[in-house]
Length: 104
Image (cartoon, rainbow, N blue to C red; front, side, top):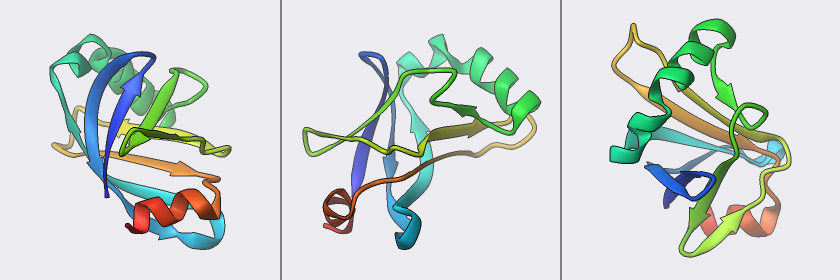
């Protein structure tokens, strides 16, 4: 299921989510940036270099699937390393009813 990714109200990208660990309520997928991602890219890459990712403690990440915002209690993490040409986003602590939306 494709979801939109926001920081605050800026749409920064999309992810085609897959369930990666149902028992942990975890979803993830490759992150595809939009133009607005450029406003945050440098800081996210810096955090990825220092900590392995940028997470919900650093940014107000939001995931929206079909106009419904998911509430992952375990947080949202985005990895964007300057060294590698891939970006990945995952989220954990998603309720079973929200996982059903990802399952489609």
